[in-house]
Image (cartoon, rainbow, N blue to C red; front, side, top):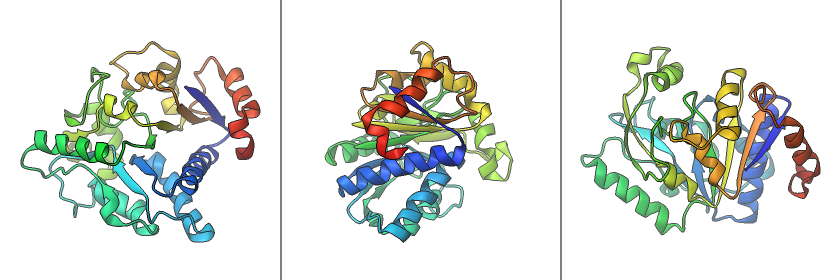
Length: 262
């Protein structure tokens, strides 16, 4: 794992978008794992801008989203399918048939989860997985005590997660669905590369636990420490509780991979 600290939220999101863009240019058939949430919107804005102004090509790209609420049809404005269409898919030249999310309206959730795993495997696995970290330390909807080897499955959401996601439901946490389908931690860790974006002072405590704390199922993001090619990009606010900031800044200034991003 490596940690990159950028001065602002916008700078952190731009860096993540540039990494995704470079990977897509190098491999047009890239299999992307995607995430939702307010933090990701700046990334998708930048990717859409690169497509519009620089011709970034998504035509051969395939995507798999981390999760979807149970009980929301794709036409519901609160569904993650609707979110992804609005935030990214409608703004770039991606083939909608190559965009995948779990089916939150499935009649057999166990079969749907197994099918989602098969779809990922049939594409050769996820090349680059984009992640955020929730306030409880979750990645995807892998709430505390999710097994670090877990697979795509149905999951109950914590009240903290409902509160965190309430802004997308008019500020009313009671309207947030209480169950979702999510990639498992084990599924996520099988991605060839992972890039994590976390911003804001309210995430500083959980970032420190995930990056520098012990690996524990109580903070499923801590499982990312096991991944051989995981980059965590944070702004100064989210980096506020980290102990190794001097070294993390040295990495960005000196590692050859990041020279062209400075």
